[in-house]
Length: 51
Image (cartoon, rainbow, N blue to C red; front, side):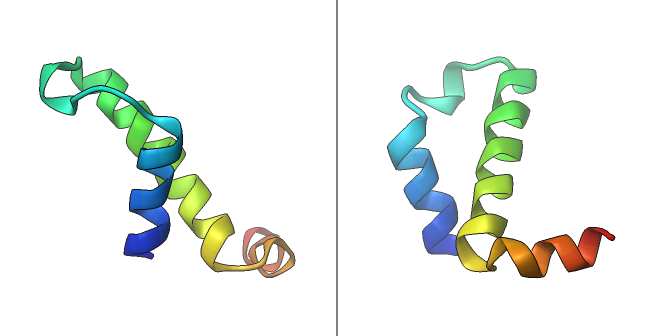
């Protein structure tokens, strides 16, 4: 999970979060967490959780 989380930050996000608005940081973290779930668990298994 940690690897998937950090690799997404590296691949998709740029800049330093120390200078960003908190809402933008929240958006980046939401995007990263969403990617991490799909990266670590196959999508067909996640679909079963949401139904």
